Length: 214
Image (tube, rainbow, N blue to C red; front, side, top):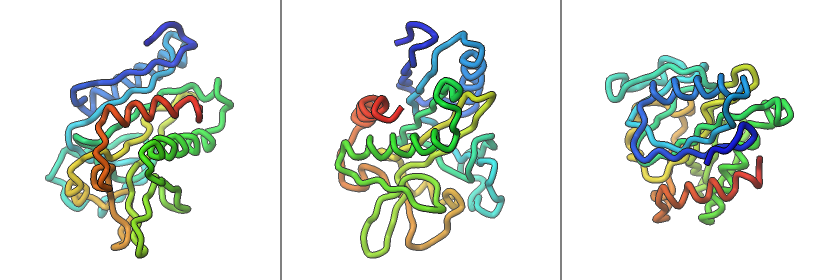
C-alpha cells in the first residue's frame, strides 16, 4: 500500500524470509528512507529457525551453537531466537520526522506490543531491567512473550519486535534468552497461553493498534 514518500507502507511476507535477506533489504530501505526515496515501512514476516546475537550478547549464553544458524547483528540486546510461528515486525521509521527521541521510540514499540496483546485479553507488561514484554503466570512465574531490539542508522530505525504466536518453545533452550537465566522466568506464546490466535489475527491487531501509538 505504497503511495508516496510520506505514507507508511505495510508489507506482509507469506513465506519465511532468510535472515541475511531481511538484513540486506532493511539496510537498503533505511538508505532510501533517509534519502527521501521511499516511505517508512513496517514489514511483517517469519524467519527460518535461527539465533541472533545483539551487540550485548555474551558467548556463554549460546548454549547449543550447533542447533541452528547463529547470526551476529547490529541491533541492541543479547541472544534471541527467531523461527516459524513467531511474528517479526521490522519497523523502518524516520525518527527525525517523529521527534528524534530514541528512548521514546523504544517505549512506543513496547506500548504497541502491549496494545496488540490486549486485543486478545493478554496483559503484557514491562519489567525494569528486563527487555521485552512479559506475562505474569502467577506463583512468582513470569514468561516473556515478545522481544524488542532496535538499530538506528542516521536517525532511521530498523529491526523491531518479535511476538510469539505459536513457535516451538523448546527452540529457546539453545540460548539464554536476552541473557536472563532465572528458573522463575521463561518463554511463552499466545497459543501456549491457551489462545487459538493465528498469524493473521495478530497482524490485524498490530495494524489496528499501530496508529494509536505512532
